[in-house]
Length: 315
Image (cartoon, rainbow, N blue to C red; front, side):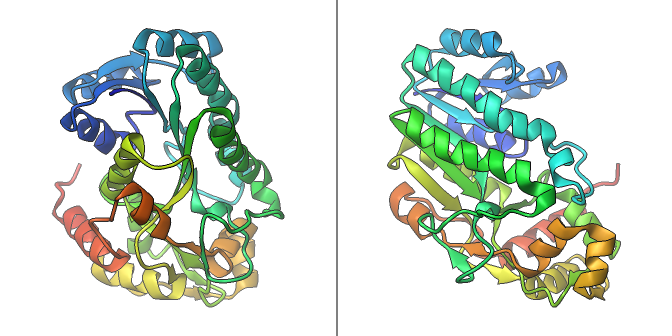
């Protein structure tokens, strides 16, 4: 098939584009950065420099590619550090998830592209009820104040993609880790900048980055329209996974902070992630996409990730 991948030089795209090419698809891959064109060409794709917020340019690029599937992976999160002011940090990404999504959907309509696969995240679920959410559970109706625009943008994408094109698919990824995906997380653990806050009762779902790309490739080729959680098999509380990551990374155990101090130092959003966020089930993705993660749980994946990071040459 002809597949048009936006944000193709990002964390998922680096794995997805070669996977699509290896599976026999004809790939047009976009990036905002001219310096990354060679990387995309070397992976076997036709590169296009494209600003996802430029309506006319998006229409023209999609019309030229005539894709059967569009993959929406556009974000602007390079250099992400603090999450105290989430909406400020995610402002450009929120634009890509709203106006950028609208541009892609308009282009899909003009090009008669029936299938659009878009990136979302599993932290959109309500922070109440059971510890593990399915795709049928309600989304967060009362997001943290500092993240209101970010959650609203993600909910907009979740709602708009399946309702606009005949085969609209939304992938609610877990927290990425792995080479090139979340070095700041590993660095924070090693420097003991990432404490367990308020008991660490927040439930996280993780997904190793190449596993996320494999699920995206599966969603390009099959699966009914709708949302899918793309996570590993084992949601886990912060109090469990964070000390383990420190251990395999060769770091000292994380510090522990009360919630009130965590809020002063890191903000309300981080405290919510540490104490109240819910995990997600991958049962639907396994069943309907015919996908299963190579790293069934974060223990296996963290060991491999930390080991590869320790063997990487210094820069």
